[in-house]
Image (cartoon, rainbow, N blue to C red; front, top):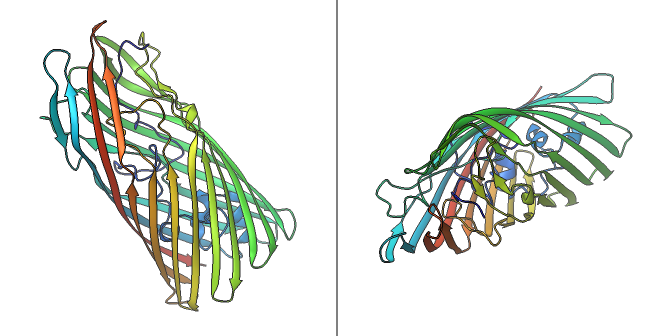
Length: 403
């Protein structure tokens, strides 16, 4: 058993770009904010639809579906509400006390950028991307009674990706990409833990796209997420170190797209996230683990539809069920639970070459239960039990241009 247990699990930088501190809107510390089009359909079919260059963030092989160069860029606004309306805190010394904390989430704008370039006269397509998969910003007030369980957890992460796709034949395309990841973060628990660190790592992704015909296609992708060593200042329980080790989860995604009618298509995605790799946060310079998690593998399933109203307007909607990875261990600074996404979006094409996309999702988290203990002195411990309510509103705006 660890001598010290701290809630620092949101400090992660997997294959992602964040130019500002974020509050996670998906289960675990995952962030679904890669595009406004994806947001508007709950990311159903995003690894194969390829209606703009943002498909790079899900499946590099789908770049083969582009006939001309295209650029897409935009941002997603996330406003997350995390409430702890009813908690019981038992300190090391003294009686149990009722406490609460309301609206400890945050809001931010997450940018993204994508470029796809078919290579004339060849079966190759290349692309570049800057986007985000993970991040968080959770802060409890200084006067929160159970401050050893609350505190501050924030991060920024940046992912710059280069990808290439090769069309094998009329049906099959293969793709791969390299991710250069930079992450920085801050974790603070009053008098117990203080972390400020940043670092870099390399990840990669591979994928395939298969077209049955012009109206039916599927995509499959795998993303390898490296263990990231972040250098900086780490202080815990009287010990100091100069780095922290963060194991990051790999991801597999399968998507399908089927245009059933000239004006309607259905699409779906199944994503598997190997959260069990995120077993503990450690540091080579400390005698104990910073925090043990024992998460289980999880992911999401999403379904959606697109209505092609006319050459200028498209409407879309979707639903996602997002499974939380938390298992037998729970943590107040990870107020995680299964989540339900309700999404809608619209695309407007003022010209044949340009598209403006708007997406909106409302995320409803199921009630979560927290039962967490902290042992600093052998034979003693403090404890907090609580229920948490999590919800989020996300709005995405994006512009795409075909050259």
